[in-house]
Image (cartoon, rainbow, N blue to C red; front, top):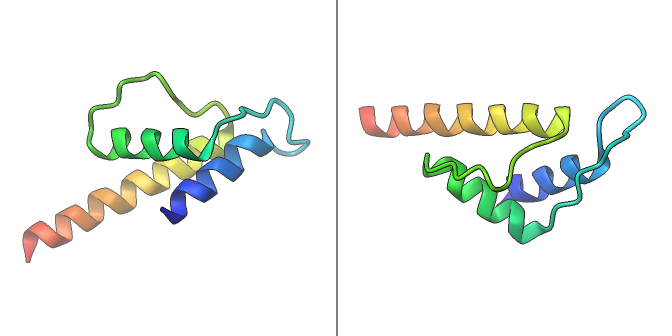
Length: 74
């Protein structure tokens, strides 16, 4: 749930360096987006629009994939 708060903050602030073009998204939409993404369903109804949001999502996915790989290998 911590990543949800980070995702919300990154999408709501906009693109660096001047933080233009923010994508207003609620906390619960972020929760829904991350659960759908991690379950690999990926409906596409909510998606990242800012650069920082996309970078954070890639990091989130990589951590999830590595964690699943480590846990399944034990």
